[in-house]
Length: 452
Ligand SMILES: [Zn+2]
Ligand SMILES: [Zn+2]
Image (tube, rainbow, N blue to C red; front, side, top):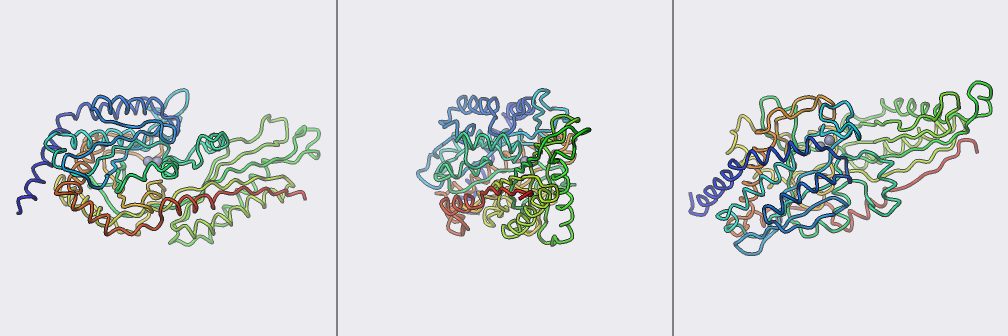
């Protein structure tokens, strides 16, 4: 073993010792966020807590990025080099029946993002150990990002209208704002409940998607005495939903198509023909081209509903996420690190094509820079449900904090040789400009009058 390798092992050990020593605090931060859930772009208390922690650690940072994001910047002591972002997502979901739901807003951490802020701070604390930091080149960028869950679409469209955001996902918006221009490599870990005996999993991919906000406008009338004078927007929407379900036999299994949605307004009074009915819908598929195909078919179904009853429909298509591409070299560093910490039997590498069906805006980032988004155990229950709970904080927060600290050391020690190699090896599919252009071109609003 060369001298530099043994030095790297020693500084990894120091970083892990710091994380171990601060375990209680790190897990406490995650639990404090669990108790104060906030949905995307509204993570005010959560951002405040991250700010407090950055200040306590003496980390210079910018706040208010894409409304609530915070980005720290810690220069290594061994000279210039690439910037490595360790990301944590600030936002919760809305699951009103979750045991940790906010009784007023219904917000709840049913996707484990509270653990991500804990692990991001833990990894950062490990890396700031003086004898660790002094040997790293480049920069460590702890980055708390808003709004990964693509929900509350109508409220976010209002924010778009008011000029508060353009894109409705946090990392999308941060890319547009140039907040990743000074980052070279990005990583984060997500909790998972479906890992069996494994503690840490890498690889696989996720679905791309577009989001729809659909508004049917009919004509209200007395539902008992004058239904013939009305145009029933609820019937239009319900017919469209059936039409969408009739598309299922056309979905190719390789495309992992998931088309699903909710009705956010179904009428105002039971005694009146509903005249204003609103839907939020999602079209997910494995590739951007399949997303386009399925999105077009879904729009046809929304029109069909309007046509059937003579209602008007306005379909707003909102740029969603891109499929995840893990950088292979970076993933390999993760794999070796995870094996070192928790053993080979507890570590899983999924085939690159294995698509879990969900979506993440880390996929967008992975189109413009080397990125990795592994999964860590510690949760039970189906994701996004009231049963999704963290039962093992060691696996959900401490292990990934140590792994990300060690991966960052691998990247930035030894003159940042590995980070430079990851960068040199990586072929991005998009740059910031082409990404923003691509997303802007997906945004459109169609108005169709079924009566005309
Ligand atoms: Zn989620
Ligand atoms: Zn999530």
